[in-house]
Structures are given as C-alpha cells and as structure tokens.
Length: 320
Ligand SMILES: [Zn+2]
Image (cartoon, rainbow, N blue to C red; front, side, top):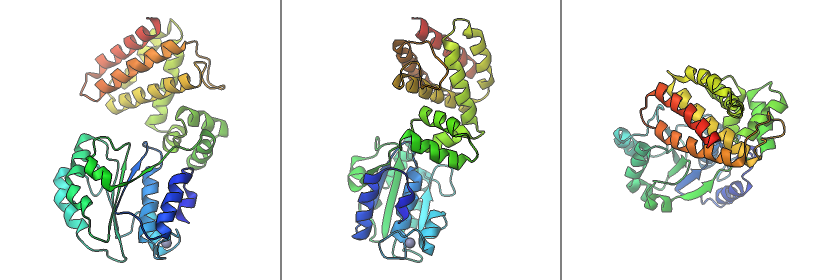
C-alpha cells in the first residue's frame, strides 16, 4: 500500500485506508501540518490513491500511482505560489475552467492547492468556495496548510481534516540522515532534536543550505548570549545579514527554534549541546522578544537597524 512508506501518523493513515477500501474518498481534504512535516508528500499519496488503476486501493505500483507520485499524472494538478500553476486571484478563472474539465485517463481528477499560508492565497482559496461546495462528481480537492486559520468555515466544513504530525526525534534523525546522505548519525540526531522531528527542516539543516548556515549562527548566538563579552562578536556575526532579508528571517526562525528547544530540554539543552548558562526565565524573555521581532520582520524593514536592535533586545532580555 502506498501509505506504508509514510512515517508515523498511523491514525490518519488508517482513516484514509478505510476510505480507500470502501471507495468513499471525500471530495475535499484539508491536510494540516507544519512546513516540512511531509504534508505535500501525503497529499501526493492521497492523489495517487484517488487515481489508482486498481479500484480504490492506492497500490503504489500501477502506472497511475507512479505518475501521481512523480508529479506527472495528467489528472493531478498542483496549484502553488510561484509554481507552474499559480494560486492567485488572477488565476482563478484558469483554475475554475480546469476543474470543470473531466478526467483525461481515469475516473477522477485531483486538484492540490498547496501551502495555503498567506492572506493572498487564503483569499484565492476562499474565492473557490462555490466549486469546493459543489464539485463535479469526479473532482477531489486536497488542500495543504499549516492550519485552517483564515479559511472560510464553509470551506473547512466541506473538508475532511487530516493532521500530519511530526514523527519522533529518533525516526526523524534516521530518515533525515538517509535523505541527506552520508551524514553522521550523531549530527542527524542533534538537528532532529533542534527541529523537534521535522524531517524536512532536519534535511535542510544537514545539507549545505542557507538554512543550515542560519541554524549554525543561531546556535553560536545562544553561546554568545551567555557570556557578557559576546556583544561585539554578536554584532560582527549579524553583519553578514545586512543585505540578506530572507537570511535574516530564517535566522530569527532558527533562533526561535534554538531557544524553544533549549527550554523544553531544560536550559542546559540536549545532553550533547554546548552548555548554556541561562535560566528558564531568561530563555522565556528571549522567546518573547523574538516573537515580536519575527512579527516586525514580516514588514519591509531597515535591515542594518533591525540587526542592531536584535542584538540590543537579546541582551536586554538576558540582563533585565
Ligand atoms: Zn495504483
């Protein structure tokens, strides 16, 4: 079965299996889970199960399953921001025209609306209310999102909601090490702990990506904050983000992860983390400051100024 290879999430998988076997896959599904949780992979698997040639099984082996999984099935369309088919108000007409077309080679057509996150995408989705409310018999919608927040309740009520949860840290470490290739198990475990079992994030941290760099910096910042003389080094480190807006946002996100995981693992952090002499109260204050900073970071801000303020606010949180 196609879902066997999806890690964890036994309850959601069992539910989907029952639906496949009884031939009652719903017309709309909403997959809730954080980015990196595998929600899109799960959506692809569901799409494959919907178009599978062996009636109502999702065998994972027939040509339809394979094409759906590889993203080249003519009856499975993915709409996403910046993708080949975009999800924007301007493409509404195209979307409604496409969903009105019958399947090319099977019984069903699947439309995946991927990563419904920002206000513009939520608006587009909400504008599809009518077709989601009364879809043609052959049509199935799969929506992936962090959460249902912002989506019209009428749409949510039409969807079967499945939660895509993160696997445990050990499973994440193992899978991420396999995907990243040639990574020491210990390193994989350290990253898996930091991202609480989020395999997608863990792979990014293990490979040579801007995310990995930001995470290293975030850990270095945590060390610097526990020493009084670290302020100058911290400013130096932050300078490399002066012209890198997306790097800055990633850094703030990594800082939130690092301090959140320090708090849940006790402020000494995980056993193999470098020691961090910080109290839980200091950690909480830092997290509060970071949450404000992250909100501000969504606007168009002056980066050099934001970085200086970041440094000052982190030290204020430690020292107040
Ligand atoms: Zn199949």
